Amino acid sequence: MSDQIQFIVEKLNQEPFRKNYNLITFDSLESVQLLQLLSDVLGEIDPKHAVDIREELPENTAKRMLTLLGILKYKPPGSVTDLSAFRQGLVTGSKPVIHPVLHWLLQRTNELKKRAYLARFLVKLDVPVEFLQDDTVADINKQYEELMEAFKNLHKECEQLKTSGLSTAEIRRDISAMEEEKDQLIKRVERLKKRVETVQNHQRMLEIARQLRLEKEREESLAHQKQEQKNQLFHAEQRLQRAQLQLKEMHHAVVDSKPESLMKKLEEEINFSSYLTTEKIPRELESKKKSVYFLQKAIAEPAMGQSDLNVLESKINEVNAQINQLIEKRMMKYEPIDSKFSMYRQQASIISRKKEAKAEELQAAKEEMSSTEKQMIQKTNQAHELDGSEVLKGDELKHYVNKLRSKNTVYKRKRLEIAEITAEYGILQRTEELLKQRHEAIQQQLQAIEDKKGISGYSYTQEELERVSAVKSEVDGMKGQTLDNMSEMVRKLNAMVAEKKSSLAPVIKELRQLRQKCQVGRNTSECFEQCLWEVKGLLEECTQEESNYHYVNCMKKNLEIQLQRVKEEMKTYVSPDPQERRKAIRKQFKNMTELHSKDKA
Image (cartoon, rainbow, N blue to C red; front, side):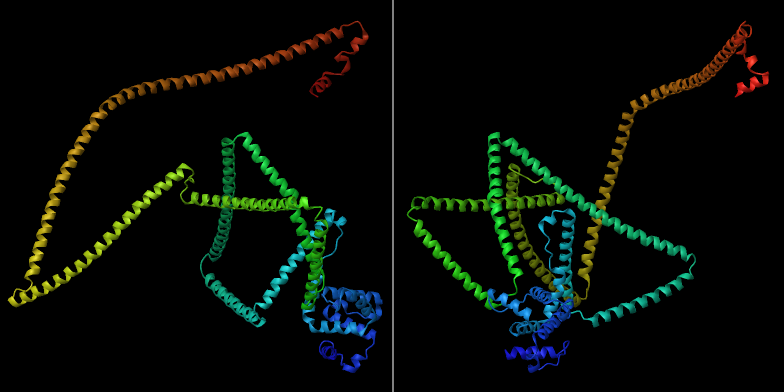
């Protein structure tokens, strides 16, 4: 206990607390001062808790401290029954409660600062389920969880960067080097600008260069888009091939099967799916939920040490022993009654286990089959890309395998022949080397004999004469063969010309007749064109006459209407009825000018 207090005093006398305590003054602190000291330490860990406890209620102080200690995963010493005593001691400022808390906090201040910082962003808000039924609240909660995950990833990246070994001095050196390179580049650009300004039409050239750069960037973007579209097309073709393969398999299944077998297969699939949905998947889901619940419960609890784990293990062993004793008592109690059904229960349990095992095997086999089908589709696509041929199946595959076996046999035989030829070639090569060595030795002896006899170079001259005579005979033979070939070619050409003339004679005769007919056709076409021009002129005259006719007809109708009006006016003017005479046009208008102006209007 004294070591604990001494450690607390040493930490409090250092930065950033600087309390200037000793063991006597620290031990003489009152409960309020201890609570304020604990609040100051918690405020150093989390700045939100740097408050004066005299300005808040004791209940709020205890609640605030307990909440932060729970976030920091502090576990009070003792069993679960001592938690109420710990809370009471924290409210009253008891030394046996405050001193262990201070010791635990001051031991790991930096770690707890980091934990408190992360707790501000990673402690989830408990939203009631009935509020999550609202779409807006659900969307906001989803965004909140996504932001929390993004913060986790960013924090991990930040920690990795901190521990990666990059120091600020290196980064500053890199920045200074980049700035120097930037200055050098700016100077080079200025020099190039001055050099370019002396060139004629430099602005136009710069504009063309800029356009070239833009076009290159556009070309790169278009190439990237083209590659993306190619990838999309490739994926679409793969999906199409998978769909076609499925359709083909379904056609084969329909053709090769009967309705009874299809119904049986569908019933088996339905039974398997119903077993998965009603028994297997709900049981697995329930077990996953339980495991998640226990994990969340374990996460919510404070951090445990090795002693706590040992206590829990001892409790688990005790509970397991009690469970085994209860099972034995139950078996002893109900064995006489259930003796008839024990065998059936064992068989049922064995069958249920076998059923679960077979269902898992079937599920694994289906997954393996789907993965194998995907691999087969990929291999088929690769085969199409390589040579574009179809994948062989059935008899074609057997025939292809037999063909490969025969080719393999031929290949092995040819390989043996090549090995024999290679060995023989090595022997011949060695023989050639030996003969060359003997020839060189004989040549040297012959040269020595010629020098001795005074006829040096005689053998060489003799060989040259023989070689020249052989070459001359070959050239003469080639000349004779060339002349024979040329005469044969001339004869063949003359024969071909005569044959072509004889074959073209009837064609030329027909061509003359066709030329005569073509001349007659040309005369007929000229007459036809002249008739077309005459018909066109007559049509124009007919159209003109029709328009004159319509004009005359309209004038006639106008005159008839005017005559009718004159007759009605005469009738009204000579009528004995004064009312009728007032309706006359002559009575309605003062003079002819007014009448004509009215008509015009």
